[in-house]
Image (cartoon, rainbow, N blue to C red; front, side, top):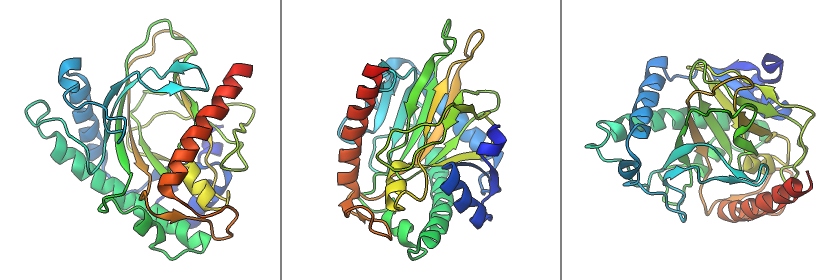
Length: 303
């Protein structure tokens, strides 16, 4: 069932990319230009960071204003009423970085990995731009990490092993608010589940069930975010997903890496059909965060 819902697509398959974005909002990308060795190297250096003591990880503290830095079980999901059972390190072009003394080679390795993610993102977004009737470089300009107002981030994530957590949420049901997400997983560290069903970027509709998407090292899981759904006049779908603990026994550590294309704060977004009023990326984020929390909290209270 997961293979039917989430097609495996080569980066060269432009029409397939658009079709998947229109139907499920998720696809698994192969032939993308990042080697398995490069992905494993980034996971290895991520693990070295998370293996440090809390005091050392805390030297790169989370900053609420920028959402950069290390956080531990700090993300409250209104859909579950609990905190996600994970720790993460948010990084951007303007963030603080773990020191080379604490994690040798961290910044060099990670910046090279970010560069590869940017190249892939540019190719996927260029495909969507053409399909929507924008100039091919439209989203590349809107999402240029070299610009000081760009909100794009890399997130290194660790879900600690859990005992007696059968069927609970390591990360509660949510959509991504930004534009486009690249997600890297590791063999055997399952838990990601998806649920298509939304018609508009502001709705909280879900389908009847969540479908597990097995974790693999190498392929990239790509999904549309709310911002791109709005930008496409709801043509491209941003759908709900979550990370679930195992149904039986102990859930081991799970590591993942997410590259969030979140565009430039001052760039004005509006779809080609002008279904919604023009709004800056910064304004969209602010409104979406407030609405997302308010609506999901209301749903959780009545469930």
